[in-house]
Structures are given as C-alpha cells and as structure tokens.
Length: 258
Image 1 (cartoon, rainbow, N blue to C red):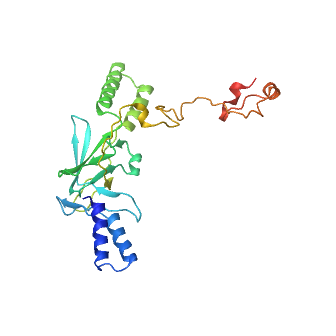
Image 2 (cartoon, helix red, strand yellow):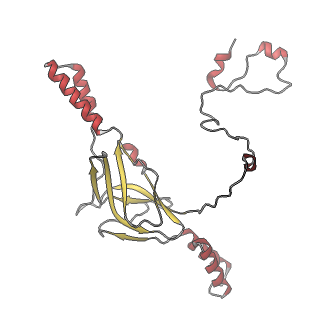
Image 3 (cartoon, one colour):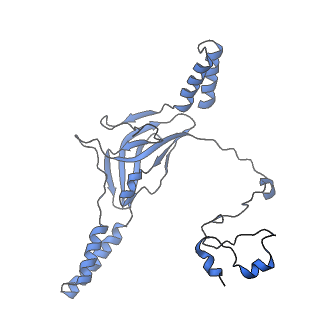
C-alpha cells in the first residue's frame, strides 16, 4: 500500500472507531498526512544545517555547502553536503540550481538532479564553469608566445589580456568553517513518484488523434515563419483583394505590401 492510500485508510479507520470525531478533524488529519512527508536524514557533521525553507510558501529547501573538491581531470567542482537521506517508499528527491546561480559563471550540468529512493550515499552537487579551463590555458599560452615574439608593447594583446582576466573566475561558493555555516548551493524538492505501467497498443491509430498530431520540434511556434490571417468568405471579396494588402501578423506585413 502506498503512503497516500495508507494515510486515507488510517484516517478513515480512526474516524470509524471514534478517535476522530468530526469531519473537520478528519480533513485536518488527512491534510497533515497527505501534505507532509517525513524523511530520515543523517549528517556527517552536526554543524551542517539541515535543509530549510527560506520563506513561508517556498517550494524547495536550501542545501548548504560542507566542503568543495576540485576534479582536475574533468574540470568540475564537487560540492559535499555531508547529508545522507532515506526517502519514504514512492518518493524521490529533485535537486535544482538556485536562481542566484545565474549571477555566477558556474552551472549544475545535470540539473535537475535526482536522488532515488534506494540511494544512501552522500548528497553531492556538481558544478562546471561555462568556459573550459584548458581552452583558457591554451589562449594564455598563445597570447604570451605572441607577445614574446613581438618583443614590444601591443595594444591588441593588452586588450586580449583584459578579456582573459575577465574570463578567469574563481568558484564562488564557500565551504563550511568553524565560524561559517557554508553557502547555500542548490535547492531540494521531495515529491511523490508515480510507478508507470505501460499499456502497449498494436497500431498508431489506437493512440487517438489530436489537433497537434505528429508535429514536433517547434511545430507550434517559434520558427520565424509568417502566418497569414484567414478572412471570412464575406470579407474576402474580389474588390477587397484588389484594394487591400493581405493581412499578416506582426511586423512582417511590409514583406507582402504591393
């Protein structure tokens, strides 16, 4: 039995046996059981804050950085949280970047990340820089070589140096110390997962038809194509066709003007 079904069954059992006496109490009990989930968590270090909501009504909890490890082979940063979870049956954990992440030059490459029910290892969050470090190093070597060969001050190379300095950035998130709890590095969401049962059919027609049909890859818009508005039969007379340009959407009307 799933957690949702179990919550309903327990509440109805208590209502039937008098433990819950009123409909309002039954609704309150169901609301509490259905909208709240208990997740077991173990912290490697008690100084690490538990995931917590920033404001009332937030969908996700903030996760804090315990320590940061740099993987030079893959040019990525591995953020350790020191947190281990045991999710209830039929639940999964989703990791999302924080909105403030857009202010940095780093991103979470596998966002949204997923922590499955069976995983008991440490929650790790991966970050990568938007510019590969090997590309930056190659550019610096090339720039320094050209400057050495010229042997003189060069305005273009100076501009290259300025741009290079802007492209070289440090990992922005700080790890936990004795007097600092660590930066918030991502968001966590726990939600109930559905178990899929596939109902295979023998023909494409058995899937039914829709207005969209097999259209994909931008077929519903965003292709940049001009759409000519259809007119009614009464509007589309020969005299109007001679006197008025075709009606088109947006600023593309000039293309069809006579």
